[in-house]
Image (tube, rainbow, N blue to C red):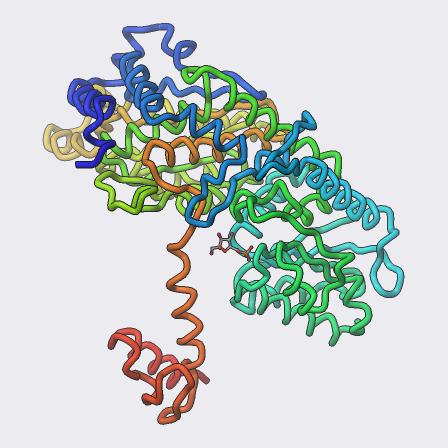
Amino acid sequence: MSLLTESPAWQALTRHRQEMEGVAMRDLFDQCPGRFPRFTVNGCGILLDYSKNRITEDTLDLLLKLARASDLEVWRARLFAGVRINHTEQRAVLHTALRSQAGRPVMVDGVDLAPEIYAARQRMGRFVKAVHIGNHTGYSGDRFTDVVNIGIGGSDLGPAMVAQALRPYHHPDMRVWYVSNVDGNHLNETIEGLDPNKTLFVITSKTFTTEETMTNARSAREWFLAGGGTEADIARHFVAVSTNKQAVRAFGIDQALMFGFWDWVGGRFSLWSAVGLSLALAIGNNHFDRLLAGAAAMDEHFNTAPFDANMPVVLGMLGVWYINFWESRAHAVVPYDQNFSRLPAYLQQLEMESNGKSVDRDGRLIDYATAPVIFGEPGSNAQHSFFQLLHQGSGVIPVDFLAAATTHKPFGDHHRILLANMLAQSEALMRGRNATEAQAELEATSPTAAVLKRLLPHKVFTGNKPSNTLLYNKLDPYTLGALIALYEHKVFVQGVIWNINSFDQWGVELGKSLAHTIRLELFAKPGTTTPTNHGGPNHGGPNHDSSTAGQIAWLSENQN
Ligand code: F6P
């Protein structure tokens, strides 16, 4: 057993879990009319209702004891103070400093970075303005109409998700596109209708070495040159967002159009930095500032609210409750908002790349589960795909529902129907339909006894399926900033409990390096040698297992 699972706080939760076996949420609601106000938190324009969880006062109390016993307050202070808590990469974790509103000093190794952060934000703002007012134009003087962000992972998912979510706030004359996949169709289909003279490429890569991004960037440059641009025009049409000056220069991008950031900004936490440039071009500086302000408000909330009224702490600890004490291995995220459709994909990276770990901070193998599989789709679509499993499948899969009271574009009765569906789903998951209720419903259709007997088990919903609901007035930039920061801090809270480093991602390395080797072998002529297979034959050489070698051979032989 590990220190964590042996700890009194963990053991107390293990015992409590046994007590909660068979406790039905519907009974808890019936017994306590004040359950909703008791288990809701308000802050930063968001209402978090977590009353539809398998919890009592005792559960919350024990979960918060575990949080305290895990030194959550100490780790939170280290996070905000710029301590190098990403110890495997020797980096501070200071994305919160990027949205700080108070002009507070940001100390790293005794140096105040606040002026640098402010200057970078100003510089980015000036560029956005120059593009919007037509001071920075395409090579023949036309204004840019299209911005193509080329990046992947954290250099894509955050800005792409927010740009989609904030469509009602877009600059009317500016379209923004996100190309991430090295599948050439992604770039090709994005640019085929665009005018090179009116297209601005933002190459976003912290390292400026990521294969997918660099391949797409090179192809975009070729397309630009083939479409009428000259080498000299590249400086107007290609900007870089990166921490790697040398590589940016080597690619041919002018330093004047390079927007830097810092090694203490992790990829999946970077949308608040210049990585948000494409987004700022889409929504404008004021809305981008509101996004930062919303996130800053959530930082303040996380930093100061008592644990039992602290949204990231509550959400994080509820996750721990299900993952570690109810063997839950998945978590669904369902925004009832079509524009918010990329939230699940964004959270997949945020949660799974951060906390998908199985050694603790000291490198010891751990004996408890960590990040669940995050999945989701916008409601109400999701109701017609995976909700069957949520309602009647085996195991516990908590759901996060998100919705705005007000829609940006009212259209008939759509919004009311949308919200009614969300409310119905969370109620149905919680209450279920027991055998007596199911039988009564069936009997109303006057079935034969045989039909009744046959159908009854299929009509029962066990209920007691947990969910959190996040409500807000409107999905505006401020609220969205707060929501994203809420999830960031939830991930942090869980990483602290699990004693893992949430800020590295070594697990993505192996596949990347193998791909480099395989690339040289794939589609090579049979019988030839490559520099990577140590002189062995291609198509099934000694470097691969028979499955990989077989697939390399099959693909090479079957390519037209
Ligand atoms: O694939 C892992 C990863 O390193 C992510 O963490 C990161 O967000 C992404 O690749 C892109 O990296 P970069 O911004 O350096 O191109």
